[in-house]
Image 1 (tube, helix red, strand yellow):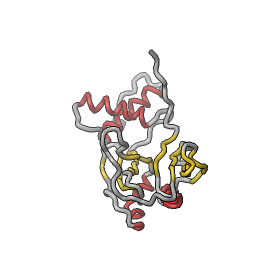
Image 2: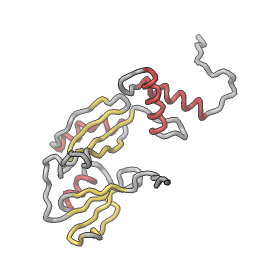
Image 3: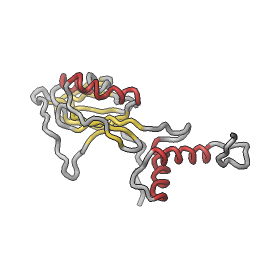
Amino acid sequence: MRKLQTQGVHHITLTGADRQTSIDFWEGVLGMPFVFDQPNLDNPDEGHLYFDPGDGRLITVFTNESRKPDPRRTPTEPGCVHHLAFNVSKATFSQAVERLDERGIRHSGPKDRGFMDSIYFTDPMGLLIELACYRFEPPVGCTHADVMIEAHRIRVERGDYNIAEVHLADAIELLVARRQQSLSADRAPRNPY
């Protein structure tokens, strides 16, 4: 038996409201460029809009002019999507409350997640959206996932409840030591003062 190895998210497709509401939210609120438009090839009564969430991948939305915004929370039973999280910079995150408030969009306020900060609100169809901002940058040649797995191992070894910034800093130091060679025979911490 062999795996079907994935190499990233290709796209996520959501059921949206009408065309203009979908464009106004995904591009007009979240800043995702509207990059492609065609009919839903499985349902000619629907449109299929494509947006770039910032990494060149795609978020697509099925639209129907008879569907109007419905702010009731989407189902969260087993098998349902709980929320979608999008990466934002620290600069953008620091403006999230003000910019959501300007539009009258109810939100959770900033949430401390230890390794990242989050804020939550719903799209016009009641889907929970998270804007997430990492508290670290991975070393060159590493990914956020590389740092997270090392931080997890450090956290578990120390018996800590959740990942905190100290685990991230120690994970980054470990990854740099593994990936970058040094002419020093001993790379242990020193106090030059």
